[in-house]
Image 1 (cartoon, rainbow, N blue to C red):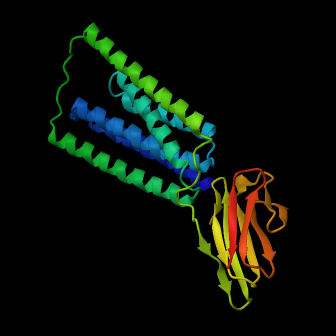
Image 2: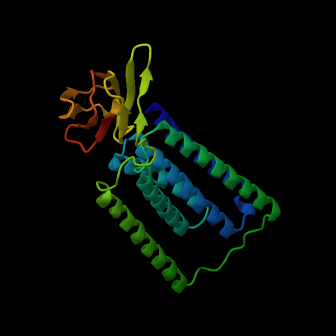
Image 3: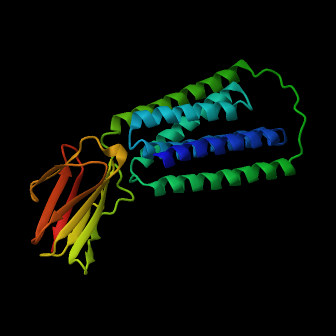
Length: 291
């Protein structure tokens, strides 16, 4: 949890650092280039932030969404404020869309610190490249003196407002779709080990398996053992997942509560067959295969 919270803070600080540096060069940038850059900023930071958030809060869509929206609003306002009010609104909308897509993708990733680390590294690399583009553009485009332009015609204002309304409705529909489909999304499918061989300890004549358990399910999902050799199965439950869970297996005659940390089960003289187990009433299942 501490690693995840630190990662969220890191992303916020990286976004803030980029915005401060963008402010130093914005007068030397063409307006269209500047708007394109802050749009990219909103997309990449909100996507990375929401991926990390959904991992940190273990697929809790509501909490992840609220935290991500706070981040998106702050970044969208700070970045879009360089231009007109429409830019602020559209930047926030783009950030919200990026957060929705990031949450949707993050839910398919198995809960792991590797996901958080990769998201941080990729974001920092992208922001570094964007910052270099800003510096390069500001050096090749001479700072130009801004001149006052006449007020936009009413028809153009209506067009801009109309497009913003359409964009707002689209983003809103994507958000509703996420909440409607959240229970049908296959959690943690990417990055979850589907099958693995147990490790054999020749000294103790024991085959051991270490199974992680969190909101993403069992990892690995299926483990193969050899017959007639005692099995030591260690179920490692994440602290945030410890909510009175019970390991149940009719095949193995197990019905035991699980605590956070390591839970050790010994199975003597296993015979060939397929043995399924699950966590209480949750749709989290795993399998032992004895050959």
